[in-house]
Each structure stands twice: as structure tokens, then as C-alpha cells.
Length: 141
Image 1 (tube, one colour):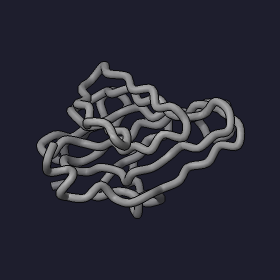
Image 2 (cartoon, rainbow, N blue to C red; image 1 turned 90 degrees about the vertical axis):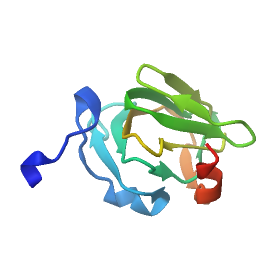
Image 3 (tube, rainbow, N blue to C red; image 1 turned 45 degrees about the horizontal axis):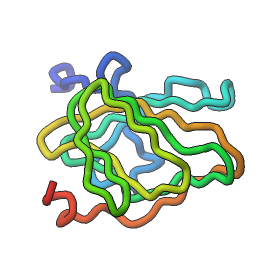
Image 4 (cartoon, helix red, strand yellow; image 1 turned 180 degrees about the vertical axis):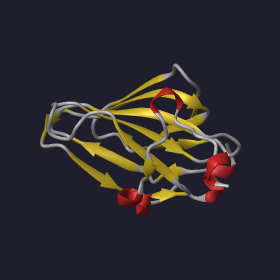
């Protein structure tokens, strides 16, 4: 029943299904914006991943500044930069992702996971979505 649905997302709440970016995720994710778009130079949103959900490899491009900061708030997840081992994440962990670094993040197989995604201001910023994290890659973690 709907009233028995467990809420996730930590103290910020789960938000709504992340339909706008669903094509870049394996599994279901949820998005709760914490800042109003255009009201600040910094964009912050709580992103919640169901167990096994992860986003595609992607790059936050910028000619100066830019990148992203992840602040983990609930559950357990993964973060991985291209060419490096995956890093286990838990509440309280902070990941600083430089601009122009290919990476992915998401939940562990058996845990919901939420992080605040902070978009770092920069010049000539854009986001490039790349290939999905394959089941083979993910299942090795």
C-alpha cells in the first residue's frame, strides 16, 4: 500500500522520480532540488538511488572552475573515476570531483543511497553523458 512505502533520502527526503535524466541511469533514481534554479550560482539537489541504481559514466566539463561535490547523506554507494578503483561511500563522506574527470556514482546492490549533488560554478560548463556502467563492471564491486 502507498502509505506503507518507506521514505528514503535522509533528512532531505527522497523527492520525485528523476524522469528528466532517467535515460542516463540504470535503475530508478529520485531528485529533490534544495536550491531554486537560477536563484543562486550554486545548484544543490538530493539524489536518491534505489539498490543497484547507478548513473552512466559522465564528465562535468569546464574551462575554469566547475566540477561537482557529493555529500553522502544516507545508505551506501559507490564512486569511481575512470582508471581508478571504485570508492565505497557512506553517510558523512564527501567526494570532490574535478572538472573534466570521467566518473560515475550510485547505490550498492543491497542499499538505498542518497547524496547531495553540488554543482561547482565555472566557466563554459557542460555535462557530457557517456556509456552506462555495465552489469559486469558493477557486479565486480
